[in-house]
Length: 314
Image 1 (cartoon, rainbow, N blue to C red):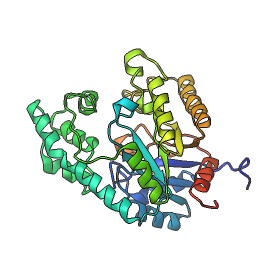
Image 2: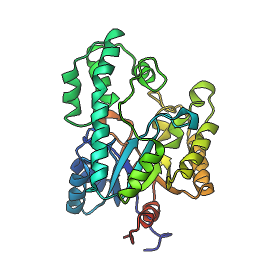
Image 3: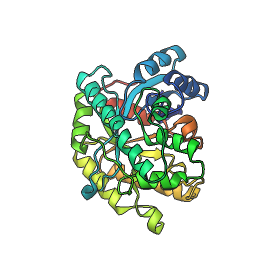
Image 4: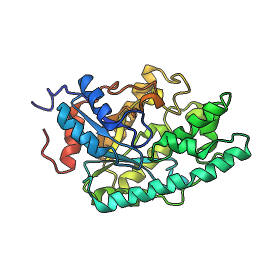
């Protein structure tokens, strides 16, 4: 099958219960197969705990599963990198340094929970630590876990305010004791045999909420920084109309604006010689507005990613 005639679809950005998704890795694989996808990547936050189960389920269901991870890098506002994530694909899941580093990142993330709970209590939102840990089910604690507990016990508090105030720059923000710089993250993924990709560039837009600007020049500059640091790809295709800052319980951009965003980042990828990737950022019931495979992402993009990783392709 030639690249031009290959109509198979993929979704290269899915989260499982190994981070903050609601479906187990095997359930993700089965769901993707039932929807007719040819391949998926499980890209949990700072965790590859779901990769082995996903790969095994892929063999059972005859669907290609790509080892993936999404690593949150340290805040670097001077270079336009705030709450930025780097995706890694096709690394060796057994790579010792990668596993050890991700374990340290998870420990740091879980370790900041007590500090975050203290800040919330000081502001009239007391919650129980054990309840948050129970929701996280032994994996990395993330803000959606904390938010679910807040919603249970403080149902009138707005979700948007929680996420805004606990984000970097917010007055309730708590930092991790350990994090990786852009360069450290890229180099780690490469040493593990993987391909580093900047996740969802449009999500870093700080001008839309302030001035309604669809394209943020600061993000464009940050993409150039990432390319110079060894990032190999850009997540061009993404559910921008269903994620912040372009979503607030409803899409804040129309179809034409969505297409403009995708076209803009596709052009930037070409300009900087970056691979194009795409995914929905599916989290299951934690982001019910998003469904697996809802964006048309062609297998040809995965083929090029695979070639960049040194594979021969399917």
